[in-house]
Length: 180
Picture (tube, rainbow, N blue to C red):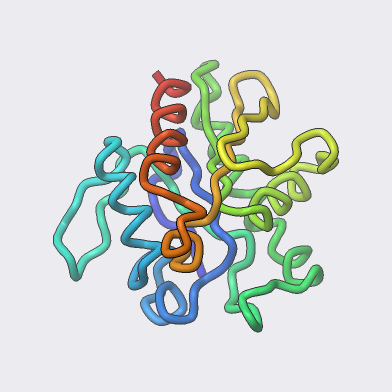
């Protein structure tokens, strides 16, 4: 599943993998399921996307979306080998993000879930011990390159209250602040 959004974006959202009922079915990351609705709502409200109607994905303005794994994993749990094989694709997106901020403008990577967080660190060759996953955590990866963590906006997390709109919005408020 290819990444979507402008290559000049200063925000890169990294999810787990294509969802069976969403991205795997529609061919677009975070489109066609509840997690996509949550993410696109936040992106639109915080100025990273423009709504184009319910049946069309939003137009991404200053944001690019990708996944740690590009194929549908069994039981929504990617195997280590799948993560290893997909790391070069993620690294390419991370490189584009950093090049878009080459004039010392800050860039932000938003990891949706611990698996995405770990995949980002793996792709960059950084040890997990340097940046533990925690909802709302902020990690400085390099000068003006920030990694922010959020629980994944999956149906399970949102319906159980593990991730609330207020908690998700707080992460986006921090992103907006870092990019301003």
